[in-house]
Structures are given as structure tokens and as C-alpha cells.
Image 1 (spheres, rainbow, N blue to C red):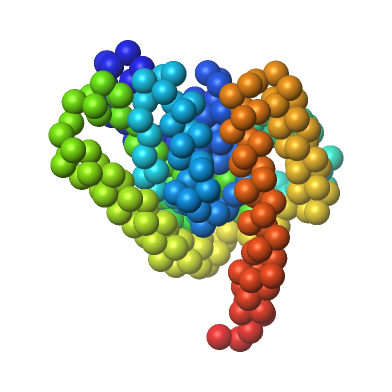
Image 2 (image 1 turned 120 degrees about the horizontal axis):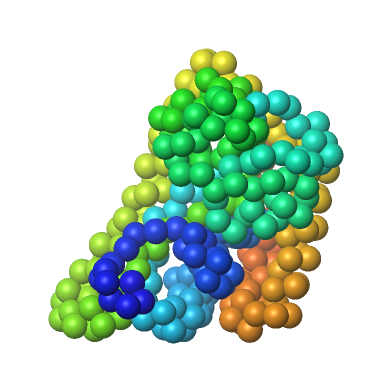
Length: 276
């Protein structure tokens, strides 16, 4: 992409965190924004401008192009009763989140989707996360790792991007540039709408097939949050790009969570407690 070998790509930004951890902010970071907040930050909170400034050094023009919503925490061959049970756990986990998993004692491994089932079946790995019920069901992971944990605290709302090589984008007419912008905006909305429709039915089917739903224990969530915040402090000290983008992102996250506390979260908790 940077060299112009390909002109466009649809991807999850955090896959490129090894080049610069700042990539991950454009996708999802542990204990980051949920999908609605991520869209707000991107389109109206200055996020798109910040990320485009960052991407300019890679000759990329980025467009938000989908969000999976909050993901599940993955499939485990055995139960997790406390954070101690993560020690030495070989966990297939994608992208940036592996850095936090390692800090809480796990052993992160990045395995392609087509190899996850066999790795779990053979015991090469102890656990694996992919996306959520709709996609996980296709891989049949419940057949080899029955415990299905939630939430995926590392992906509260994974935003996907369309990357376009800057030279190729600038060669487009104003009309075609508008087409790209409108098409990606439509895909952005449609992607989450499809997940929100398909995941509930898939989860019911997985439970009927024997999947055992489990929440991550409180001490797992607490320690993972602590280690995430420490990691972000360390990155802010040594990575100027991360420091600039994350400072704005963190301020926005704080404001959004205060607002959601009084509105969305309270409403959702009430509705979820009702017999509907």
C-alpha cells in the first residue's frame, strides 16, 4: 500500500501495530471506545483528522468501513476462575491485544482463522478468540473448546478501514472521491447492522449445541484494565504518534463514558432486566 503495489485494502488497522502501535487506535484497543463512541470520535470528535495525519506518512487515505460491535472473549478448553488461571495459557488472539494478555500472564499467539479449529482440537493452543457468535459458529469452535467467555475487553467495537493509496486516491475525480466516501459510510453502518441481527440467533444456536457461556471473572477484568492503562502510559512516553492520538482519544473516552453512564448504560441495564 505505502509503495503503491496495491491501491486499496479493507482491513483491521490493529494488524499493523508492529509498525507503530498507533495503528491499533484506529481499530480497537483494550478497554477502548465501543462502536457507537468510535463512530462519534471518528466522524465528529476529531479522530478521522488525527488518524489521517498519522496515515499520511504511509501514503494512505483511510475511510471508516465497518464495525463488528463488541466482540466475545473467546473459546476456552477449560474454565477460568481467576486471573491466576491465565498464567501460561496459550491463547490465539489477534493484533495489539496480545501485549496486554502477555502482561497478565498469558501466551498470545496469532493463528489464521483456518487453523484455529485444528490448533484447539490438538491442544496446540488452550483458547482462541475470533469475532463473535455469527463468525465463530462457522468455525465450529464450540466442538473443541466448550467455554465461551465474554466480553472481549480488547475489542469493545472493532472499526474496520478502507485504505486507499494516496496517489491513487488523488487521481480520482471529485465525483469518484465522493463515491468512495459514500460507499464506505454505507458499509460502515451496514456491517454492524448485520452483526447485530445475526449474532443473537447464532448465540442461541451455539448454546443449544452445548456452548457454556461464562463471564470473565472480576479480577481478570480488573488486572487486564490495569495493565492496559500502564501499557498506554509507557507508549505515550516513547511513541510521539501514540501520545498525540491517544491523548485525544482518552479524553473523548472519558467524556463519552460519563454521558453513557447516565443514558445508554442505565437504559440498557433496565431493559435487560425486564421480561420481554
